[in-house]
Amino acid sequence: MIDAVRLKADRPDSEHIAHADALAASLTLDMTRWFTPIAENCFSRISKAAILQALQEANGTLPSPATATLSKTELAAQAGRTVAGTEWLPVPLRKAA
Image (cartoon, rainbow, N blue to C red):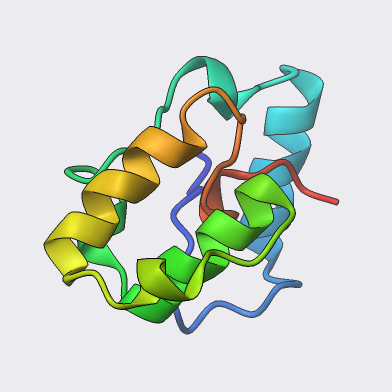
């Protein structure tokens, strides 16, 4: 059995994570084919700061100052629209380096 759940307490060099990463690599698992981050499954569950960071990662540029003033609900919805098609994934779903 492979335990691929990453917990906050897990160290990056955890043995179970290494096994999960090796399995994902051997299967050429690409989560961009299976997961689309939207407000409901991703952005509403993280902080506004994390959403703004995600927007920066997905676009390669800082979000506008007006974006930071949106409510979290509005920001989460905008983030879902903005990252669509960029293949951006939250860190736990990204390929191991």
